[in-house]
Length: 42
Image 1 (tube, rainbow, N blue to C red):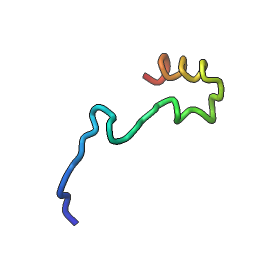
Image 2 (cartoon, one colour):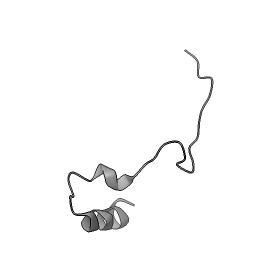
Image 3 (cartoon, helix red, strand yellow):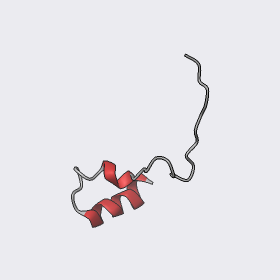
Image 4 (tube, helix red, strand yellow):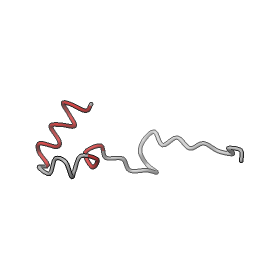
């Protein structure tokens, strides 16, 4: 199988990606999760 096309979704138009969603179960508090993503992950 050969690759015929590559799609770059630079503006997150085709695939929605929310980093906070990954931590939703482990950090249930929305404010704490937002702080964690802003200060620790990024």
